[in-house]
Length: 161
Image 1: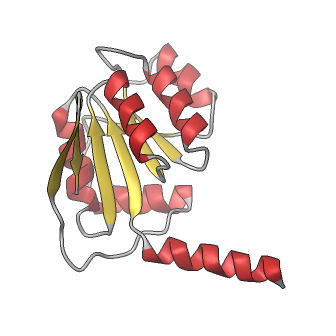
Image 2 (image 1 turned 60 degrees about the horizontal axis):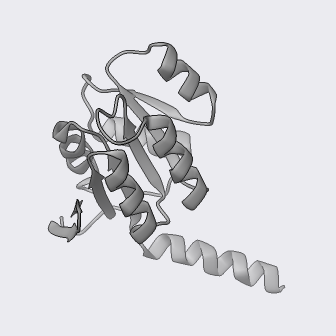
């Protein structure tokens, strides 16, 4: 009986809070596309432009439900390192790897875990969000309004929607 109540409470909590999303990429367009695509839903979206900022976000804001990791990360860390840290501090997070092309390092990274791939130069809209949410079994709740707020976590800048 106690386990059933715990399961119901966990389910109720998942319905109440927005999903928490981390976008790690050196290209600001990636963050903008994710924010735009998630705007109709209740989602807190945080941005990190390098591995160091990602580590800071993960340290201060984990756990995350979903993470988009760009390839390549041009400074301070590799996508593999970032994914490893995401899995360590947010083991239940779903990870989407974003890249312009699929080369050997991307293939190796995709084979190292249950990750989803998203082509960077393609369109990313609500239909993609729905496919990713369905594939990753995420619960997206429509939002009454879009919230935009900027936060700074020195030295990283974190944007929240």
